Image 1 (tube, rainbow, N blue to C red):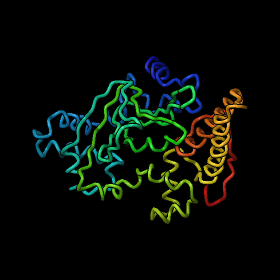
Image 2 (cartoon, rainbow, N blue to C red; image 1 turned 120 degrees about the vertical axis):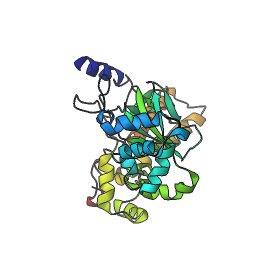
Image 3 (cartoon, rainbow, N blue to C red; image 1 turned 180 degrees about the vertical axis):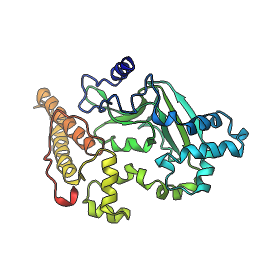
Image 4 (cartoon, rainbow, N blue to C red; image 1 turned 120 degrees about the horizontal axis):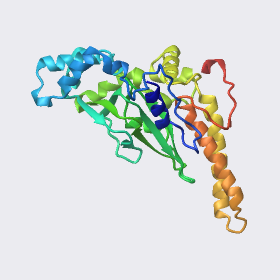
Length: 305
């Protein structure tokens, strides 16, 4: 077990240039999956579900679909769905076994709102690549029982040239769920507790305004945020960081077009400051991880806590 843990820590070791890193799992963390099995994949219901998923969709009997449904009752993704809706999705669900280092989604890919994956075993990371010097580092992770889609990359890409992709960190087993067109309108209502990417669109306003727009109470919003590692509603912090980003972008553009007084050293320094601010902006919308600089104040009003 100790050897497996050391192997896992080696795979998840932060890069030398990182400004944000994936928090390291502890020995009791179900994310430590090398040489052991996650909580979900240990269950008896999963063993039956796995056997059913190995059959082609056309060959699955109603008993096979029932075995898949029994396992999905443990998953947050299906929590608010009626039995009939869940039955339709389980009928067409597939099981993917994916090696480590496989890129599943890129920010440059065409959007696919129908495709969602649920991690049963393993760890998957969101990685970002910066424009200046192109360092790549992880900013988010998905472990056993967690759900993701390409929409999560919208949290990290920006107008300063940030690129992002979702990549497997370890060998993984994922359930692949495709939402048929006739069910997509209702899908957001079923999965509202999971729709974190939608929630982040309101980080620029107060939590009370966000609650009114989403039709949710502030307690429910705080619960979703804390589940994703956000201790405080970040709209004041984001406003401060975005003001800094706009100022730095204007100054950089000014220097780039000034061929007479172009100062490469100053330009490099401003670009470094800009990326520090961009990282702070990304950090406001993702799970907490260490940063070397703190460009904004942590104080917030009571309605943002």
